[in-house]
Length: 163
Image (cartoon, rainbow, N blue to C red; front, side, top):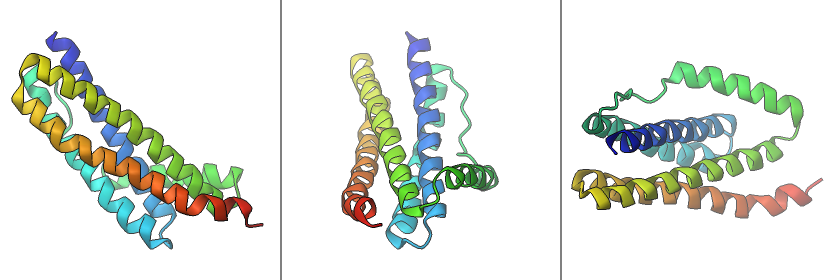
């Protein structure tokens, strides 16, 4: 049982790291849009903190995880690579914004489900520390997902109908 919980924590750790990276990449690609840049960066910090907290709690289940989220140099390289790939396929930065917001929403939805699984597991195991962590972090993930959804709603129609 401990192996399963450790595996779930490790998978969530990876997913949070991926979500943070996606938020930071979108923030960097869309610096001119202050809502995307500043809020995206702030929301990425939540996932980075989740990575640290999951690494600390993983030790309780025999899992050694890196407590530090991916560093800026790794992220910068990923941003440059992904940007060039995406811009090469889509010349319209507005369409790229929609793509980025959809990807953030998808990743946040997956992370949300993982937090729910961890919370249910913590309740069954009576692990109050893990339950507390889930109850703290899951609402932040839901907020990340709602932000991406709100940005999509406010931008999609204009982007799609503007020549």
